[in-house]
Length: 300
Image (cartoon, rainbow, N blue to C red; front, side, top):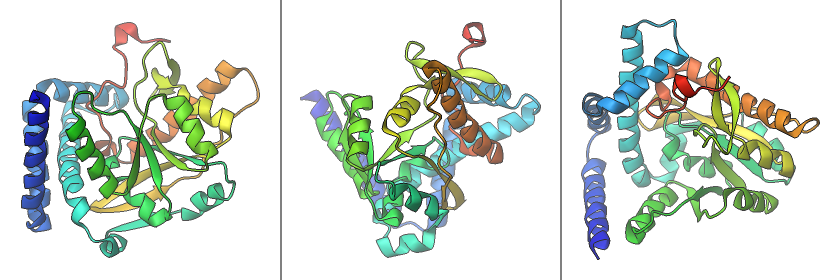
């Protein structure tokens, strides 16, 4: 009963905030996002320290001022991302063509012609929360597996509806590997985050910015078994709710040789791609989570 009341209150607050935002000029909407980002940068000291530590670890040639600047812009971008996600459901479909463009669509079309399903590899880069707009441009549903919020049924349904309004098809996830494989066999497009830190017991250690980090072995294992193309997608920010959707060449998943070595090599390819786009625009990545292990626990 208490959780239902909390859910109702949170939904009311979010909906009211959305209605407030939608009548504001874009410049003010963006300004609110920047304000949220700067406020959290100042208030969330632990996350700020994690971001700064991570950036130093990745870019050890930068001085403290440059590192702090990247961290602050990261928080600002996250604030803008939040506001964009609130506003996007109210953007008319015909206006999306003015706000978004897609590059290298032919990589997707060639992969789709194989009829093996497609693993769309996405990252916590730019505004990944609005990934649903790609379904509009690709003219195909994009499936995302999501674990429901336990004990918050009403809030969970509402959050799913927000993502569905943005263009995603949300499917409850109970067993990631089996579910993804099944949807690929059904020739669906499945979007998977490729930069989450994996538990040590389930991880493969693959190089990322010169260090080996716990990386998902599931993505590469599924790709190797199903032979589904693995295509990285990411957004390049051009302005407030204006992006270029970058479709990259499929990553070649090796399949011949020792299985553990193959998993490591293929996972390293994913990390290498992510590293390449982070180097282009460091402040667009989600530095506030612990992607690296503490140095005392770091593995070779």
